[in-house]
Image (cartoon, rainbow, N blue to C red; front, side, top):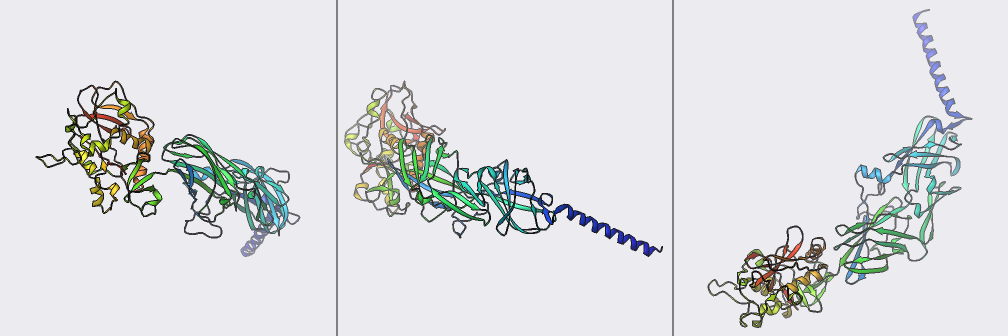
Length: 572
């Protein structure tokens, strides 16, 4: 043969082999002109993390979108305690977090195939979710689906958490954590090898609660339930059409809230709510102790805007449990934060109320003396007040002494019966002879220098240097101090006692109370007008509250000059 003829014959033979091979491959994948899906198809499951497809901002709200953050109406819990709730969409974290939150492990799944809305095949299997993806492996006797070439819809769902009746897949809210459905629509089946992807999504939304406070609290339970029995509690998914329907009834969701750490606690569990659920049709029961007061109240949840949950969303229902501090205003009246300019009102706060019954308030900033050393030598071996307390024998009377105004402004408040420490000026230096008393007494001048107009009852001649007992009332009434200790035996110069629980709660509460109206709480020696004798050194000494450097607060006696801050008080 000629060389060209030989090559022509080889080409024909090779073509015949290729055609035969392709023909054999199609025959292996088709039975009675139907495609054996077990041989041609890989069903790949990916698991959508909560909120993965709806990360939006609160400024963009569409038909399928929801707000990132929704304020709810404040809730008055009694005892001056107010809860400020906010519903916040959880943000996506890093990849490792996303994988751990969406993973179900090894689960059973059911696969359904639809042609023009009619069920044409089904099979059961398992898929082991590792890091957010899995491959469906048939396990049922009908381990394959035979389909004629064409276009199909496939539905996959978690078998053990969804009840099927024909085309209807029913999901209860208590199975919301593991009830997943995925749909692959308009898939062309031709007999060639292919991969069909499913995005498995949670049917429900999930919600957990977070409680923040200024003061640590113990564990308690919170319960959310419907106001009336017309709340979506079951979802019915029509696998043929891909349309959800919902039945209504009652729901009840309990949250176990652990004891706070740093005044913050997160519930240990999620509860699940159906799409189209309207939070305004829910009520919550809060049953716990906040700011040393027992609270048990049930109240409706009231979002500021119309809102419903969607599938596969995750939320935190955050409650800031605030304390309703009472402030003294420049017009001489008292009121609450919403009345202040910082809270959206018109009033200027100049003090915070320590005691309503005694009409006692504390200035929101230190007097100017805070920037300079206070010369305490006047206390050294001198009785400057008409009363010098013997400790510890007179402790019970000393801790309740409220004569700060007298010690500051009245001649009778001084040992000699004539000196007014608020106005006494040293004849040589022409400086205040009693600087702590002087600057506390003239706090109104500092306020006036800031452009603040004062009513007569909060103006000149009203401010004074507080006693030990009056300043301690601020720690107990504003900061909710647990106790005031005396460390006997007294008689050594220095620390005499400790303000309990200052580090964890009092500083946080008072700092917040001052800060929200632009006040300043400086943790430094708090100066008082009290004078005491402790047996050693045997002569009068001044008293202050001194941070211990470790977040605590001690009260101490001193007989030498020291740095300190002067917070003026007033009886309004």
